Length: 104
Picture 1 (spheres, rainbow, N blue to C red):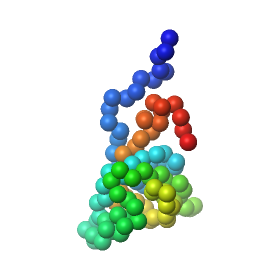
Picture 2 (tube, rainbow, N blue to C red):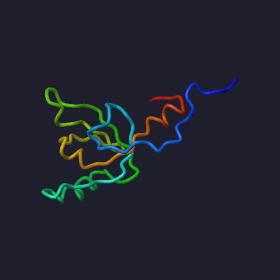
Picture 3 (cartoon, rainbow, N blue to C red):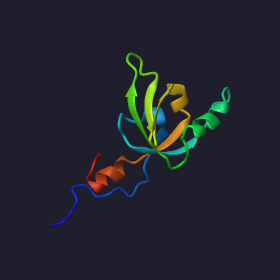
Picture 4 (tube, rainbow, N blue to C red):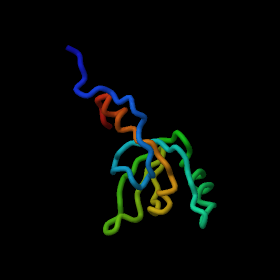
């Protein structure tokens, strides 16, 4: 028998904000929404690599309080405040990892 333990999901991966994903959970950037009080953040985040389709991971949270965050986007690592990470909308790709049976 060649049946997977869990069938691959037919549901699209969930969207959330970057600061909401678990540590080391792979995701891809969907877009950036800057707050009205800081519209320049969308351009700044794009300049450092937060572009649609780019792979991103949350690598760490400061202790105590969880702010700032350590974030990897592409091959670069940055410290972002939670407020900045909340501007980055991502799509979780964990279901794709589970379906492939490998985690790196």
